[in-house]
Length: 448
Image (tube, rainbow, N blue to C red; front, side, top):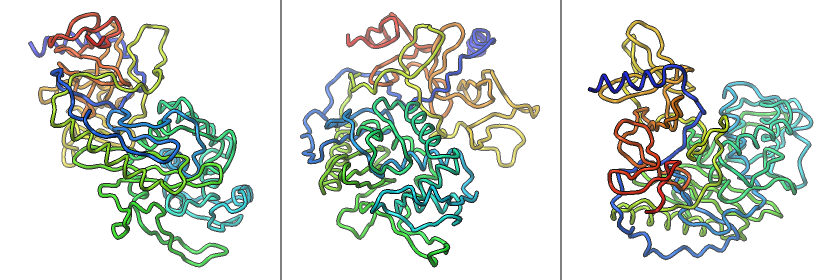
């Protein structure tokens, strides 16, 4: 029976999978039981900043927001986006040569390392200077290194923001210095930080407390220190479980702060914007509330709930009706699909793009199903393991866990909407689930 089911899927998908490069970072839940969550009894945090949000990084759900969709100047928290794009597009060991434009295109009083035209650092050294010291000319130099010019890099920033689901963000520079056309919202910034903190290289750099930079034309060897005070264990503002963050300040932005923290398997992202000296206390209040809310949910059985929407789906297709799984960047699997083959000639292999499978004959799987250890995996036509949503040519949507295994008989929460995948794999539509919940023609739980 298992082999017959697999053959049916292979036949249905033999021509092509409509690969939309989707990997929504969603939470997969067991079938809901329908009772009320204990989180409702929590008191909301008292936030002094004008804008703030804390989200569950796994699902993108807003746990608390204050003016979460209001546009503010971000200041140097912009550099999280810059760092992410640099890491995704450059070798860390390549050399960055500072131009005259990079070192002089700064406003008065901007934080700087004092780099001059002709100075050189590696990309890795620049990233430490960018995230720890918040050096603005370093942001310019990295932008030129990646894209050839600051304006071209800003275009990449805006493209990336849109791909992450940001709908109220526009960047014009890589550092966040004042510009009326450079803005984002607390929620959009949380989506950017969520992607940044999913990158292990960025997290490693971003949680380093001090780093030694080599000598330059105008400076001897020097040590730079992290600006985010919640990372220092001996500081009263230290927050246990912190995994990354970035400070910001300009005259127009006020204090801005992004912070990621993880406890007991729960990862949160907190963003504070337009604060006046309360950015650390506000952040602590946001994270404390978020962890308490998630913990309360863990002690109660919760049914599907309508969550704050992350905005319209970014999916593009040939005009066909779709559910609303959101487009998200690819990310390494949270759990490996199988042990990486260090001493074998076939099996799972991971590279910088993702996981692929080498078959016993030495060929690489592509555009096909694999049945491994009683789990079904789909290998995209590019040869890499599928994760997230995939739309097959027969019109069926399938969801694949971050491990690559096809999801069955479970609820999927995406962009504030609940979907259900059946025991054969396809998402159910226009029916009632086995546990009694009604799905509409797009597969979305109707609330009944």
